[in-house]
Each structure stands twice: as structure tokens, then as C-alpha cells.
Image 1 (cartoon, rainbow, N blue to C red):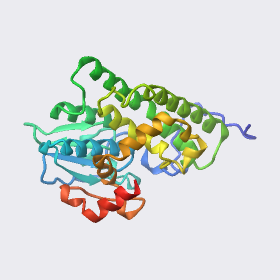
Image 2 (cartoon, rainbow, N blue to C red):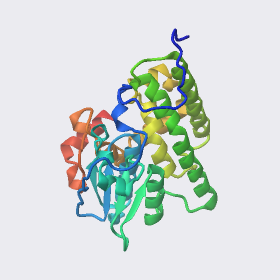
Image 3 (cartoon, one colour):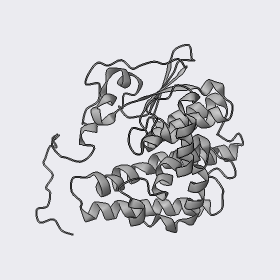
Amino acid sequence: MNDASPYEPPKVWKWETENGGTFAKTNRPNAGSTHDKELPVGKHPLQLYSLATPNGVKVTVMLEELLALGHSGAEYDAYVIKIGDGEQFGSGFVDINPNSKIPALLDHSTPTPTRVFESGAILLYLAEKFGALLPTDPAKRTEALNWLFWQMGSAPYLGGGFGHFYAYAPEKFQYPIDRFAMETKRQMDVLDRHLADYRYFAGDEYSIADIAIWPWYGALALNRIYDDAGEFLDVKSYKHVQRWTQEIAERPAVQRGRMVNRISGPPEEQLHERHDAGDFDTKTQDKLEAAS
């Protein structure tokens, strides 16, 4: 489809704040804080500042899985960062993550509090801290890290590429949608071919690779993101991804992790803040499991 008025890039690009789009206010071309705001601090050593986007869900699922394995030191406080309101540009948040993206973790159990940002780095940090959810066998460990870093490099094509132009851009254009739909389907085929031979991404062992990939590609397989884009992309045809997705979705820790810092969708699936396991009341958890 040809645009009657093709865009001609200027010699020097300038930021136009009125360019529209669902997330137009969440980004800007310069770093640093825009306002002073301290972050709340709860009772546990691990303090998480996040939102239940796919990247945020990775970390809350990881923490809930660690707690399910009996690692009491993984107890955490989780606070919402409303990226639509620009809270990621507050001074306290920027001190933890100079990139102003969720999630961000502060570990107060170390002599000097340790900041950890980027979701993949947080998963690896927690896996090494607690000695869990990362294979100890060198070959399997490497395979888990292969897929962890695959996810970190691939998801921007799904989210910032396909998801943006299909669901969030102020206007729909065929070229970018076709371009990123093709890449997203290629990625799904990569996953499907691997899962045809293995139960999980590191083989027979559930790991941080699965925890990283599921909130993005599992959500797509379940048709939960981007205006029901699953039908457009024919996600049901990836039968091995579907098998893996359903298995992960049935894990209680995954169901709990999906709820934390969620501020949209069905109320029974939302837990805006999380401070201990008692925050998941029985009624809410029963509803969530019934709906999964």
C-alpha cells in the first residue's frame, strides 16, 4: 500500500510530543528524572517496582516460583509504577534504573543495597542468588542462557514492532504490520520447532528461560495481547508452543505472578501491591485458577 504523501525525513530529527499513539507519553528522547519522588520501601529485603507488562510478569513469576520452592528469602514487596503517568521518570526510580523502564529491583540484603534493572538481568540475579531455576549442568545452563538472551533480543520485534503498529499506533499501515507480523511468526516457528523436541527450553528442566519467554510468547499464544492478535497471527497452528504455554499457565506460581502489579483487566486478576503471601486471598485465587 503506497502512501499518497510519503514521509521525507528531515536533515535533523526533532521530537514532536503530539505524535499520538497509546504509549506516546511513556518515552522521550532524553534520559534522567523529570521530578523528585522517593520510592516506598516495605518490610522485605527485596523491593520490586514494576507493572504487570510482560517484562514485569517475568520477575513476579520468578519470585513466586522461588517462594513455592521454599526460598523464604525471596519474600518481596511489589509496588506499582504507572508508566502511563510517567512514574518511571521519578528520581527514586531513575536511581535504580537509569533507563526508566520497568521492572526494577533493589536488594537490601547486601551490605550496600544492590540495584538490578533489565528483566533478564533480574532473573539471572535471582537464579544465582538462590541457586534455583537455572540448571547446574554446564550444557543445560548454557542452553537456558541461550534462550534467555534470545528472548531479550527478540521480544522488541514482537512488542515495539508488531504490537505497536498493530494495536497502538495512531494509524495502521500495511508495511510495518506485514514486516513485523512476518518476524513474529518466524519467531513463533523457532520456538515451535525447539519445543517439538523438548519439554522446556533448557530441555527437561523448567528454568528462567521459560519464565522469560512465557509472558511474551505465551500471552500471544493465549491471545491475551495486542487486541486479540493471536487470531491474526494464527497462533493455534503452533501446536508445540500451545502445549508448552498451557503447561506453564497451570503452574500456581505463574497464576499468582500474573496478578502482581496488574492494574487493568478483570478485577479478580489484579493485585496492585504485594507484600506477603496472604495478599492472595483464597477467593481471588480460586477465581484465577478457574479462569486459566
